[in-house]
Amino acid sequence: MNFKNLFNLQEKLDHHILEKHNLHGKAFFPNKILALQVEIAELANETRCFKYWCNKGASPKSEILEEYVDCLHFILTLGLEKNYRDAEFNIHIENMQHNLTDQFLNLYVDINDFVVCPSKDHYQTLFEDFLCLGLSLGFSEKDIESAYLNKNNMNHIRQLSGY
Image 1 (cartoon, rainbow, N blue to C red):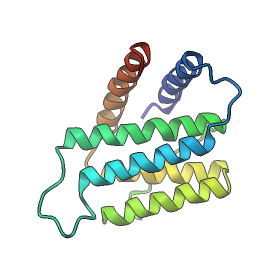
Image 2 (cartoon, rainbow, N blue to C red; image 1 turned 90 degrees about the horizontal axis):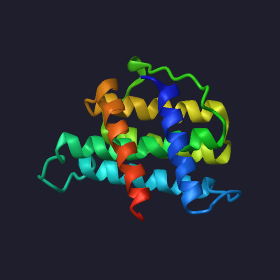
Image 3 (spheres, rainbow, N blue to C red; image 1 turned 180 degrees about the horizontal axis):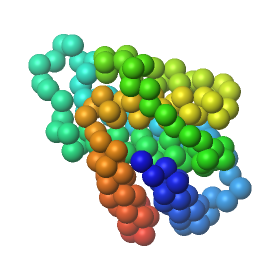
């Protein structure tokens, strides 16, 4: 995955938002953290992995992928805010958990660790665990990048149209 390109695209979107809404000099780390937590919850909801009481299956893969890249936007913007765009990410498939519910819960632990200590190591762990979740959901790197590009373009259009 071309992380350099993803960070560059996210930086342009973030800059566009800051300019359009005149937000320079304001701190948004807590807002971005909460936004990521909400987006992860929306993603989990689309997978329905935790809904043991429900017979309805997961949403279509395309909807799950769209929610996944919504999360990716906030993970990238958090990395930009902390100047971690040069971080390296390695997925350790042998460490992947196969239970989606456990993976979602682990992401919340990762986020909490990052809030308590926003180090590059905690950021890398969060990002790597998020990438592992994408693999568990059946997404290829190409799927993720393509969906991110589409959603990033849509987000620029939304900003231009008064979103």
